[in-house]
Amino acid sequence: MAHVADLADYFLEAVDQAAIASADWRGKGDKNAADAAAVEAMRKTFDKVPFDGRVAIGEGERDEAPMLFIGETLGCEIGNPNVPHVDIAVDPLECTNNCADNLPNSIAVLAAAPRGTLLHAPDCYMDKIAGGPALEGEISLDGGVAYNIEQVSSVLDKPTEEVKIIALDRERHNQLFKEIRELGAQLHLLSDGDISAALWAARPEGDFDMLLGIGAAPEGVITATALRGIGGVFEGRLVFRSDEEEKRAEKMIDDDLTRLWKANDLCQSEDAIFAATGVCDGYLPGVKLNNDGTISTFAELIDVSKGTIERKDRVHRM
Image (cartoon, rainbow, N blue to C red; front, side, top):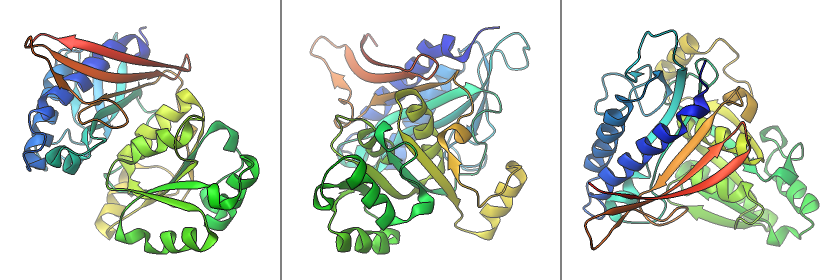
């Protein structure tokens, strides 16, 4: 039986094509058109992949077209027991607003793992914490803001005022921001894109020490997969915006909805892949239109089973 990792080139092509399609909409002020272009390009690419795929967690529900909806089947071998049965966590265009305004950090991104090993949940929110490998076992959502900043300061041997926290700039984080600033740590705000933020925090050479705050759950599952491959801490706890959303979660998740999810809970298999391609410059360089009519893409591929990170810069003839 083939492994999910054997399909890595297909996943790379899916994020590349989504990035290329959405790049046509950079700076045009229409985030929905950019997102729709990414979704359609990714779906067309998946239609050619020899696997039985399913969207485990993604942008929305079946009636919210043009999204890759939760539960959607993907691939050209659906129902074939002899091909990999794969779950996908996906955001065809993370940071749609940034793409529309041609601002940094918009990416096309996904995670893939064997069926049943990625969290299957609604498009709800997730409270998150992420940091580098040195912080494994040292920080936790259960610890609170002050505890976690003190732990980062101690483990990384730096004064509190040099601890760098990154978080999404959202009104829901006002109390979080107040606590961080009262403790004297440095707070860096991001308009969108907490996958990139978590990866920056997880890498020893990154610009930040820890990610805190509430973002989308699909991005949490994708981030957890990436951090299983590169090392680091990731924890999440589901946050529901309505009773209806919580009821849908009860039908999809056979577990305590209030529990703490660690990276190995959100992505339960080492046979997993993270793939991302830059749309606008930022964590990854954005799509580049070359003078000879070709298109350059700049991607990152993380193979969890090997613990490898590869930059995949490619030239496409369209």
